[in-house]
Structures are given as structure tokens and as C-alpha cells.
Image (cartoon, rainbow, N blue to C red; front, side):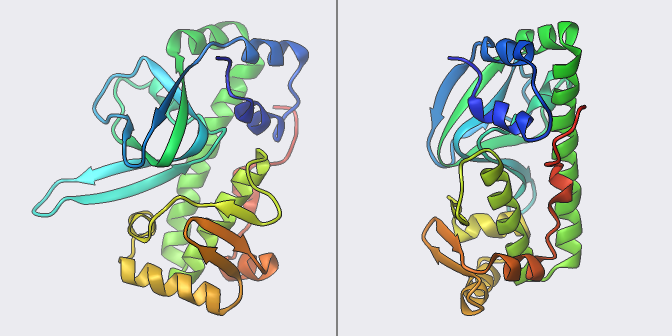
Amino acid sequence: MALTEYFIRYLQQRDELSARDLARLRTIPTETRCFDNGQTIVQAGTEPTQSCLVLRGMAGRLHILPGRTTQRVVSALHVPGDFMDLHGFVLSEVQESIVAFGPTEVEFVDHAHIEELTNNHPHLTRLLWMTTAIDGAIHRQWLVAANALRSSAHLAHLICEIYTRLAAVGVAKNHRMTLPLLQRELACILGYSPIHINRAVRDLRDRKLVRWSGTEIEVLDWPGLVRLARFDPGYLDLERKRR
């Protein structure tokens, strides 16, 4: 199978791809695998020979802290079009696992193909670098949100971000999206107890900002949600310009 079109859309949101760029991307062979909720996609502590992209569904970067009680922390969420572990191409070992949230379809790319890109396609190499830089910007924004926002606003910020990322590649529209996360998983992501998450969800509903049923979310008042979250999508670098 060829490289996912979602990744091409991800790049085209941010730069113009030449016919040569598109032809090269679309000839990169991939291996597609399906994962059930909670299954490990990439195992921590391994030396990778492939990197992977989300084709359908959602995945998270999972850290497990040892101790008297095992603590699980999710430090990133990945949506269709994301190159989840491109950093594994240049690192000797991945330090965290990637797990599926809900049914997830993933494309794997051998590092030999990424190496060929970096050797012969400087523009595409810069765009691959850009994707890792955006990942870093998202991590930094998560730290800011965790320190600056209270539970309802923090959850609102996550909803704004994930919707914006999904809409950018054509997976979400009309302020509706699927978020395949249980409240205990949202607790791991945002650093709250499930009780606090439940209260935050109820608060967003009571404010008539969202309609939230199971895994389906409809944003009823986008400007209001953005104000509450103090959301500025600049860190997602969605401006289209030559890189």
C-alpha cells in the first residue's frame, strides 16, 4: 500500500508539494496493520527499524512509571496523518510505548525509505523535520495548558486542538468529531482523577458548549469553547508557506 493520503494532506496544509514530491511520497511502500483498543503499536525499549503513521482511529504515547502502584501517563495523542514515531529514525531506542485508543489502523514505513528521502529529497527532508518540530510544539503547549488552565478549560483546550488537527486533514468537519477516549484515559492525558474529568465534561455541557455522547462530540459554541480554553492554534503551524 502507498503512503497514506492523510499525511500528504498534513503536509499540503503547510507547504506546496511539487509533482515530484507527490510522486515520491505516493511510491513509498507501507505495511498496514490493525490494532484493537489498548493494543501496543510500538513497544518502549525497542530499537525501531520502521516508523508509523495513523491511518484511521487514534493512538497515544504511553509512559509507565514504576512504583508501589503503576502510574500510566499519556504524553501525546496522534490522529490520522500523524507520523507518530519519526524520531525513532534517528534515535537508538524509543523510550515510550504507542498504544491504540479504540480500533486503529496504522501504516508502517521501513527506515530504509526514510533514509532514501533524506539522501535525495531535501524539500521532503525539511518537511519531515517540520513534523517533529510540530510534535515538540504540541508537547510544549500541553505543558502550558496543564500549568495555566483549570480542569474544564484544560479539557476544552484538548477538544479544540484535536478538532483542529482532525479538520486539517479532512477527518472532522462542522464542529463534529469522534474522540475514542474513556474518562479514565482523559484523566491520564490531562492529569486529573476520573471524577474531575466527569465534572469537567458536565460543566462543558451545562455551559452549552458541547454535546457529548459516548465517543461523539459536537461543539455547539466554537467561539465560546475557544475563549474558555484560551486556544490559539498558532503552535500547530497550519500556515501554508514555502519551507
